[in-house]
Amino acid sequence: MLWVDNHCHLPPGADGDPLVAAARAAGVETMITVGTSADRSREAAAVAARHDGVFATAGVHPHDATEGVEAIADLVANGSYVAVGEAGLDFHYDHSPRAVQREVFAAQIGLANAHDLPLVIHTREAWPETFEILDREGVPRRTVFHCFTGGPDEAAAGVERGAMLSISGIVTFKTATELREAVAATPLDRLMVETDSPYLAPVPHRGKRNRPEFVALVGEKVAELHGVPVATVASATTAAAYRFYGISPAEQ
Image (cartoon, rainbow, N blue to C red):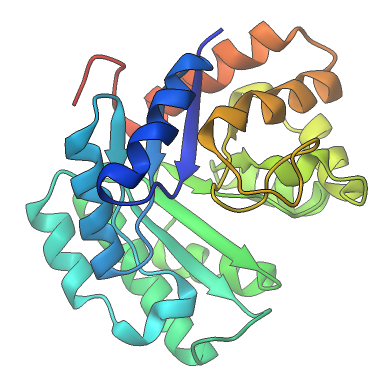
């Protein structure tokens, strides 16, 4: 079985080499390494250039919203990024003022629409505001809620807007009852899988440093919730990721 880890944060330089090698050995043929600031987006592009089958995004995380979007806009216009983001709202930590988060999120929606690129969304404790801004600015035709942590209602609202849901290792946690209900109720063709490594390692690795090679454990739980073979989930989520990002395994 082959997998795509559609959202991870690979370290720069040679530090990422063993992680990519281990992922390859585990059947992860493609990884999307995600930018969360201008500097980290540049690092992500350098990692992608270093490895076949690794692609980069450029975005400003809500934690870093005070840096603005000017640098990201330049990167997106002149780089080889496959998506804008991760972008969004995080009202749990509020590391950036909420008004600034809203402004920067809206600007990145505009970038995605202007360049016809996918939008990768981070939202935490801000579902109504996230949907409000998306509806106002125009939902990009390829949009994903990364590390989806909502319940069935939020999942349905996202799917109604044409969005994908990306499922992380949280789905394996005992406390994630509403998330599992949401995954079970969402059509398989609207799902992708991710690790969000180095964060959120799935069971039985919870509490340890996460790695892209663990994405199959997320897929196994999705398969269990849908009552289908794991190979079905591997095939469906891999195909979905390639469609979503507009890439193929042979590209670099």
